[in-house]
Length: 318
Image 1 (spheres, rainbow, N blue to C red):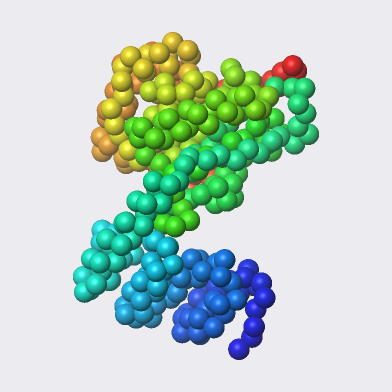
Image 2 (cartoon, rainbow, N blue to C red; image 1 turned 60 degrees about the vertical axis):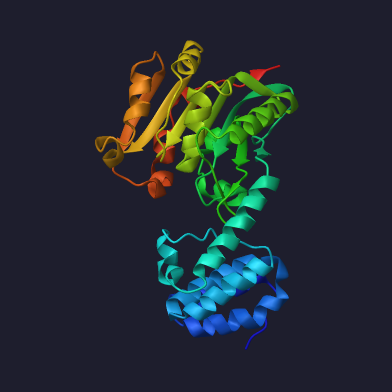
């Protein structure tokens, strides 16, 4: 069996075997090579779990989870998640579930909201720039978020982009957001202050955008006036919730502008009735777009519907 010195090459080979439905050979290859790539141990354990699922080997799948737990990894185990239905009724799952939850909660306790900044092309410190703060979806992180957000070139050239990563873990390497979380609110607020102090940001042109779980956080932060921004785009939010009328009106008085893209079925089913009514009853400057597409397709429509209020901006010279 061929030896691999590069993990990406190994991963490509595993993908090929997966597509060929040669799951056992993929397992054999991973088990033999995993000792060579300790930094990718979590990723390989996830691949093995998926392969054992395809092979119908519940015992090996649960053993892989147990081994991961011993190394400090966790996998967002939950009996209600479809990918775990096959093993949820097996003896030993409850113990794995409790261990997984304990590891995740401990990681959340130690984690913090973080951000990474991407400066515009031809950045110069003698100008001030509009800012877009990006909030990832559930099950994402910095790297996935950067890959998924296909900003128009005109935006990359003119905006400071700030990618946020939540403190709330899904599994060991991915995260999620939620609305009305005191820690998220406070830590984003502190990061927001730091960004404004460290970078030549136009404080009158700071925007939020997010998809799915990230959209939940964006709406909360903007509509509830947690941080003072100029506008937001929320793509396919998943949570409804309570919005304080006084805070909403404060945001409206600052002329915050918002665009919310909903899944049409969600709105027609009344899922976001509370949020929509809050906006309707306020003086908030907002627009709602209904889409038949799911949130997984947002990248295909993002560039075509980037709102004018975030594109037609001038970069000011200090």
